[in-house]
Image 1: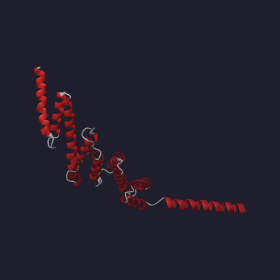
Image 2: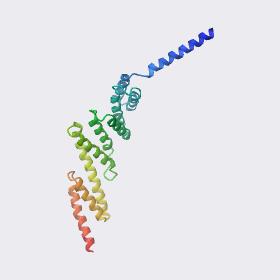
Image 3: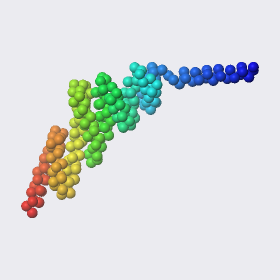
Image 4: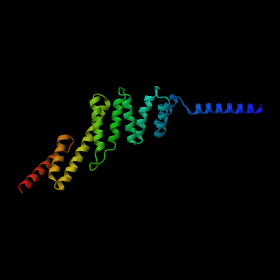
Length: 218
């Protein structure tokens, strides 16, 4: 009999222990969003992501889940983990294409590329991606404040791309590859006529054409 009572007490303790841990660990959706936003505002982005991810996993149909999805992208952006941020923003756009935050999401996606634009002598793939993203924002939401805000970013992307083509063109010119140089300089004035480098490109177009004519005469 004593053994039975002892086993019953152990079982009761184990059961109550499990319940206690569940209450402590499994917070409500509201508690998780408050935790996440407090951590985010304190710039504790990694813990914020953890709170938002828990909310998404435990309460996918909560009214706070959409905010959690958005703030995951923002937290990754502030951590400069740009690929994870892009993935989060793209997931958000895919899941909620009509949400009012979509212009902001596209703008932030563009910034993830824009913030990684390298010097003009390096690869410009991030500048291309940033430009494509900002132009998509302008096309889809022409009157949105984020679209207007993106105009300056678009100009800087175009300038970076133009200066890169000019840099490559000058390299070809100095290497006496005049036809390849000419193509680059023509690309500058065709694609980026208003970013402040077209005058130099025009000068070198004339120089390339002269050098090509000289080669033909010889």
